Length: 276
Image 1 (cartoon, helix red, strand yellow):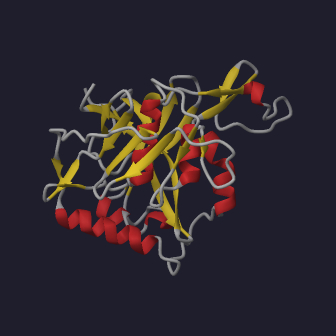
Image 2 (tube, rainbow, N blue to C red):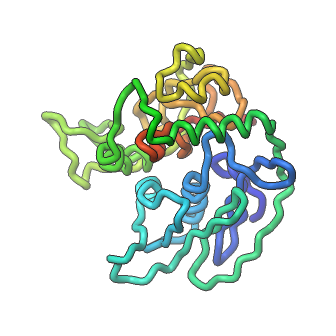
């Protein structure tokens, strides 16, 4: 299996390793999309691999957010306190290419023939906007989510982990008078659904978390989805594709960068419209 499109990326699957790379190219070099990075690419590689193999411990290199990879893929990340050896390694190249490989596997990168040329001024402007957004001097005037709050809620939100309450799926899981957060009530929802409604906030009307990037994107688009497993939810639309929402449009949920605050990125699920 080579050249498969998976979560908006290109995936090359082999027995001992999986290669995930960005479809976007600038001057012949693979580059990340507007809301992608090494962490989102790594998550896509791991989730693709989990269709074929169980993964125990995995090593995550510098340049990726290990906690987010663990939460989004519901797995354990190796660290110095781990008792066991990791069987899998995530590897990062100089381009927008990530490899998930069994320990000591020989990896051969396959040059996929899909190459979407990006607009250089837009790409450079988005890179600068993200750098400014991640600056400790940049203070959002909108909702504040601490790093501790983000990490505490990351796994249920990123892994789409719902809860069965009164025979109905609820997402995200929550406490109530009739249910609790017991593991027995947890269920992973399918990351797919259909559009019930959508709206685009103008750059001037977008939340301040997106103030630096919204003008470049022409606003911020959100969709109300009916997930295939029952619950409804509101999600941002991915920034690096131009597909337009319409009623009942099929959508998959993928992990992308949401915004930066206090020098680190908050990741979340975004809606990617599936174009036939």
